Image (tube, rainbow, N blue to C red; front, side, top):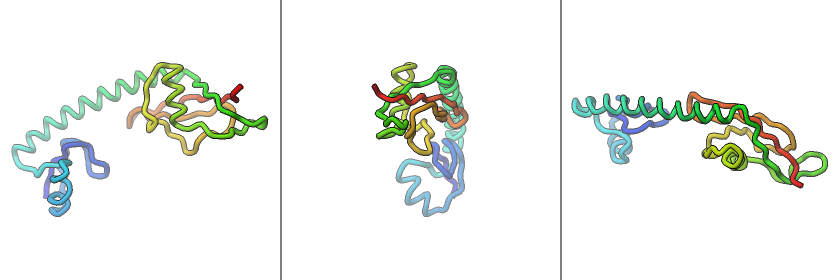
Length: 149
């Protein structure tokens, strides 16, 4: 069965895409939940408009992300945390701490989901943290973890 996606759907496609899915999946999940519409000639014309608006929105989001990346890339974010004399932190510095430092020091409001940390920072020193601001914009930022006084 052919359906037109009403929003970006992980593993299936983007807003406005025409996808071939099983009839049961469309009838029991995608259409009732509002994720898709059954493809008809009128809906396919609407899909073109949805694709154009989604492309313009993605371009605007990418431009915003690049502007934020230009502001963040040259900066070093400083986060202070309690640490032992050996330099090991008693706790850890996670994505929420990095986002709070960006808001406080640079004035950029971010969501903690953009911070790509494999594991929280547990040592004093400089660390490179990747920020995924957009699917095409990834910015490395230096996070300096200092011991609290």
